[in-house]
Image 1 (tube, rainbow, N blue to C red):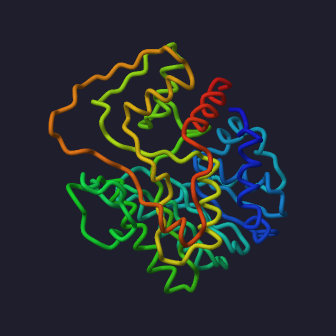
Image 2 (cartoon, rainbow, N blue to C red; image 1 turned 30 degrees about the vertical axis):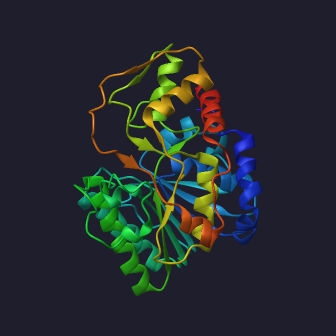
Length: 331
């Protein structure tokens, strides 16, 4: 798999340079480093070159090395084999822990992994612990609410059901807040929404990835639903900036939505991908919209992140799609 684009990593450093300076010489323990989010954090940290080091937990070190040859032998990176629920604790102190792993969906598995890594943090000198949670903790977004704020965090499900994945993240957030309070470290919560960018899977339930896959296959772009749900997309380089900033400057126990507040429909997204990657390619919509049906949304309010941490999207959606498509052509 090709490395992340240099211009994107430099974008992270341009906007999070002061954060990285504050992390000079720090030691990190990172779960989920082989995934979309984790890979961006690992590569941007190594690109910053501030003398920091990281231990990366993965179930399959051989696969990580084969797909990430450009970083797997970096002297600042140690790859540790293990599952987040059962890994053996490495020796030494780790002032910073980033838990970005995604155990199999379900409250029990996710909570088991969270408990284990919290025990690790409590006994290894951790000062700040960042958990990449999800906007799924809110349940189904009310149709009249165009952007969902963090104020819903401690309340019952807002409308309809919460998925098992959302329940798992809610439970893990609660475990983090409780454990961090009892053991005296800062527990930071980043609730992730939808993103675009290199390393986002093209063959899973991510619309922008699926649409780029369709373009690479020669088209048409296929929308499985009716195209009317609203989403918003933050580019991965901006996502990295936000996560590093939340880790260092976020308020403990106070969740931050991470994403873009600029909503558009899935049909609009398909049109943007077509226009950017393959002008003239057709878009097929599998279902017809139901007249009068309430709008389906998964869009965050990001006012807290902007107001308290000075964070905002920088790379526009169209440019992010263009960069993602250019990278995907190299796979």
